[in-house]
Length: 149
Image (tube, rainbow, N blue to C red):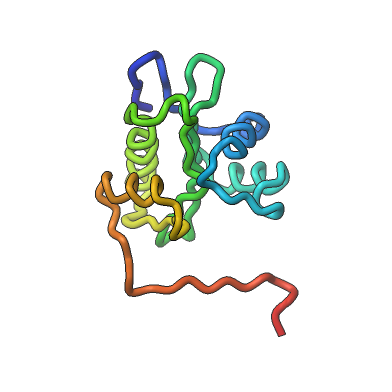
């Protein structure tokens, strides 16, 4: 994985990194964590299902950036992308995305999608700055399994 300035390195997340990831995500004012997709069981299952794709940026032994990456064998999805506030504007988010795209390319996935809340100005600016296409031709719908009639 690519090395970043200030001895920051990117490595695949491990199931043991759950607590560190939760500290990072809970400190991020731009992420909305829902119980069912932020539990340790979910994290372990997601990491196991997507080996080597979920990435963390580490400064020595502190997780200062992370992204979960999953795919359905055709398209990938980026979730919970965050960089610690103390380390923003240093290119760490861009490096995490580049590393994720490199891994997706390695396994033959040509496109990835992500969700950004409409009022997340910093997130919208970040994704625009790195060249992500802002899709206005789609609307997202969600169903909760077991509750739909």
